[in-house]
Image 1: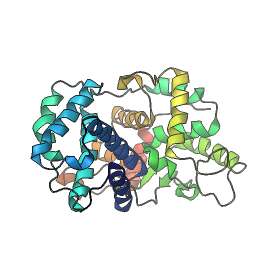
Image 2 (image 1 turned 90 degrees about the vertical axis):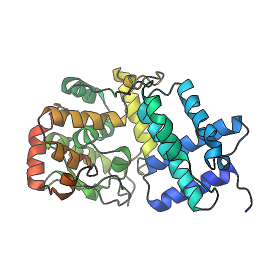
Image 3 (image 1 turned 60 degrees about the vertical axis):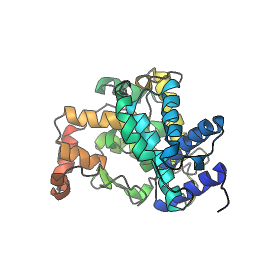
Length: 317
């Protein structure tokens, strides 16, 4: 077999992820990790296909040292990196490009020892009062609507970016995701309260003047087309920085406030209100972790009632 280049490997890997139905955000993260790893290997005069068999384990171990030397202090970020690399080398083994994927073996032998010297990454959580001030500091109606949907539903970035107008139901104030790409999410239906309803209806009235004919997306750009992941992230970062809760130049994750922080806040608020673990997991769309969770079926009437009594009000105007 002819030797394949790193560029060819990455291109084929991305296509493989798309065929698997991986979320756009996941593919972006995996690709970025692989590119960082490629640069590390190239600096050692190696290529991606050289990580084949246990005789080359020093390349992966060297990469772990490289990450820590360059400021990676979060155990979860190490996990993400090695999940991406495991996915890559599992595919290369399946495709016959390499003989043995060693990523999981190296991870098992080394990552726990790294955890002892790594500071757990704690994301910023802001309380209800501060969240209220933050939401009201956003003067752009669409961006305010985006933020309140994030914090009231716990949706992920790619889930929100995929939303179409017809997925919003004001009969019971719910959102039903219809995109099957979200392999991480088990429950496709989430709820929102009257406060979110009012803001969404205001945005929909404005959207009619912006969206291009035939555009189905709930959130759109100034040119009238679907607003995608990267643009959503930039908008959130801009408002968070202006409010003083996001420092893009800091290497400490606690100094950042991004889309994922909304999901953490959403979960925290519901826990503080006393919502059950099973209901929170259902709203988050988490996969069952225990046998009890698999066989426990949730009545959505009870779920909606519990949600409405637990989700905080932010007095957004």
